[in-house]
Image 1 (cartoon, one colour):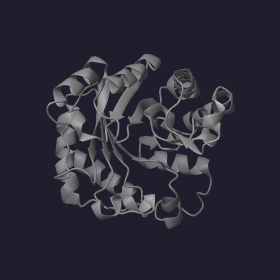
Image 2: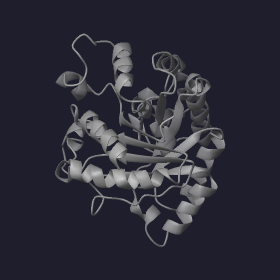
Image 3: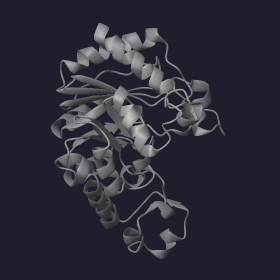
Image 4: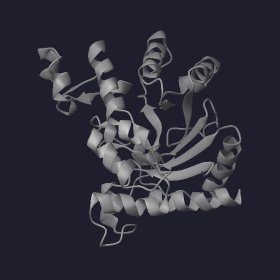
Length: 295
């Protein structure tokens, strides 16, 4: 097993498919695309599960369509991270438990605790085929900017670990209070004590571009969101345009050295490129694979 694995966030991104720069013309189905992707990379992050709870059948098909040792990381459903959730995305069995005033809204951020806990159970159950096949990596919890260090936030993180006791967990914080003084020591100790991986990120909102390399669990996890600062903060810009950024090799070389060092502390390290615009993520991921070999 490779000590450090590199992949992208999704193999079905619309602009990647439309660009015709990675998949051959004869590769037209979801199954064929996954099989082709797995010929080039041995890990991938699933983004669609943020928008709706995954289906167990899909997890089974993903496991069948990839070679032994391939690893999927699953992004947590929006309800499980406190993001606004489209009511229409909520499974019928859970909608039946919601009060009328919630059902009348297009999207909701606050849900009854019992509904959230049931969603956790459904999330884990759907991923069982991947776990049984040995192909389930991290469950990625990407928290919103308003998720700040507080008693309530730590209680939520405790719930995540409680509901998913046998899974590798990783968290990405979008509020820098978590990793700056005076909160940093407390938050990182909490993650270590609960065996939750802190997601190291390179992103437009980071001053100086590069965040710290911190290992808090057996798995180390790094995500590259691009550095398109202008589009990221511009109102009315399509989401895909925010990720329109191709890393320069010099920038990736510095990261390869940092990731290599982190891999000495972790049992397994993953580097995921989320600059999902056309083939940008694919190109950067391939370059990063080579740089890691040279580091």
